[in-house]
Amino acid sequence: MTRRVLFRGGSVLDVASGEVRRSDVVLAGDRIFEVGIGLDGDEAVDCDGGLLVPGFIDCHTHLCITQTRIDPFGLPRSVRPLSAVPVLRTLLGLGVTTVRDAWGADAGVRMAVEKGWIDGPQVLLSLRQVGTTGGIGDLWAPRTGPLDFFEDPSLPDPIFNGADEARAVVRRMIRAGADWIKVTATGSLAIGKGLTDLELTDDELTALVDEARRRGGRRIMVHAHGARAAELAARAGAGSIEHGTYLDESAVRAMADSGTWYVPTLSVTQSDPTAVPDGAAEAHRESMRLAIAAGVNIAMGTDNPVRPHTEVLWELRHLAAAGLGDAGALRAATIGAARLLGLADDRGEIAVGKRADLVLLDGTELDCTALDGRIRRVFHNGAEVRR
Image (cartoon, rainbow, N blue to C red; front, top):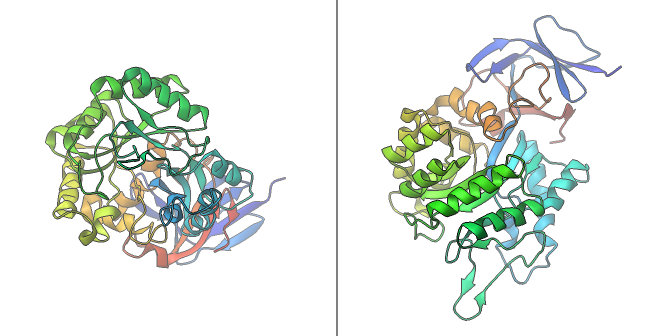
């Protein structure tokens, strides 16, 4: 019989309601077996004075590109996937038990975690950020022409033009193992230009959404800083808008009407406002205000904050400060994120039958300002994580 592990004497966060209740939790294998008062088990974890929350979910991270950006041409190809090993370990130690990689990791990274060769959260992949000629995913220089920092068949060519090629690029990514299709619709804050550009047509976006849906019900995540690109993507049926720094009323209305999620990645502008264009930090907070007022669903994603990955939980403090409050930020990082990723039947809340991903925090308050310093213990798939 599977041994039952009892978490006793603490409190549990109901992420749906934001309420904290005294409760015991029993795990059996990798599942939550019971939640209630006065439970028993074969062994016990003392949770006195602590708060149990679900494992956190980061819907926008980059597991492999931090090191390869240092010298993309001079480093051996193996550096890219191997650089994910300490990143995955760091994230898991901070209570992040599921991630959606927003380009850079290939199917081998996901397999290594699934096989138990390396420790880490469950990984969902997008492989590359696909886009049109001249977009931010099109690496090109006047002296050399097209460039590809990866030159790796496991990370296929991401460039397309027109609806037919849009369908083909989706097929290439899925063939190589993509769970999501990452699409670039505007320029980038990192290069400071093209932020209000429209890099795709209506037909291209519609083709991307339709082809992804045909292939196992997959969805697209759209990098869009400007309002028009976000609106266009939402009306085409995008699963999520990433960043959304400069949204307006029309954009958030389209997102709310279409059920498109917002992954604001506030750490990009809020952790160090001096590192982004003037006014971007304020505009990002205003976009959050508009999205909340319109009833747009919001999920947590970080996009690598100032010190990559070690500050993943800073995103929750930014979400709370931007209008969600502490309970709302925790919801965005748990059941909200699980709903966006289509995983809510399996995780995202402390409920019977859900996956046993738990974080034990010191104290019972919902204050998100210093969550990383409050982590007492982390459990992933029912097993304790070495921290």
